[in-house]
Length: 291
Image (cartoon, rainbow, N blue to C red; front, side):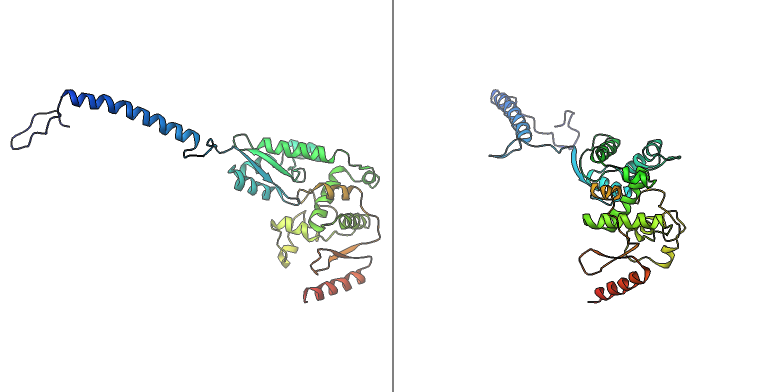
């Protein structure tokens, strides 16, 4: 309502009626508005609507599942997707550091790849991502505390070597018996000074678990390329589960030097002691895939 004077040719605004009745209306309206505001506040607090329970606020804690065999970069993507915490933060917290060097017994900063134990973790989005990393490392320590590394030591393998082998086993086999067989093949080839020729290490070097590797992929100049360089790769290629770590620590003794996927839908492998037998199995596997 205007409070100024009415100018020439303008219609003066109609004044409010300052009557006793008007004042009574104002007195009644104000309490009604106050009650309404209070009621709305209570409705928002308790969820609103008959029969509704108390409103729940969004929990800052989210359960994050890491399956066996993931690279830390894949874990970082999962963390970002599930919690909104930037993948870069997780990668920074698990990258090469003195902590990794200490865990690996290495001479230079090493990433935490391999030590990030796969499991389901409650992640508080309000807390730094380092809390999650600490949880993964402590879980790794707890779940592997009773593993006997005596057999590995007799073969001049360190705990870190066993972890590297476990990461290869994790990507290559899916049953308890085959994990131990594959671990045994790896040790047999190391002892015979043969290249490991494991495609999963090339996939790690390329940065993708793609099934079909190209000629350029196989020739990649990376210390993780066991088709080009002898011995174990310099570090784990994924974060293995407990079964694979135990298999790598206590492999199943055999004379096998080769294995190839059966390619028959079973996710199992053919194992061979000679190259000729291995080639025959490769041909058999190819025939299985043509069915």
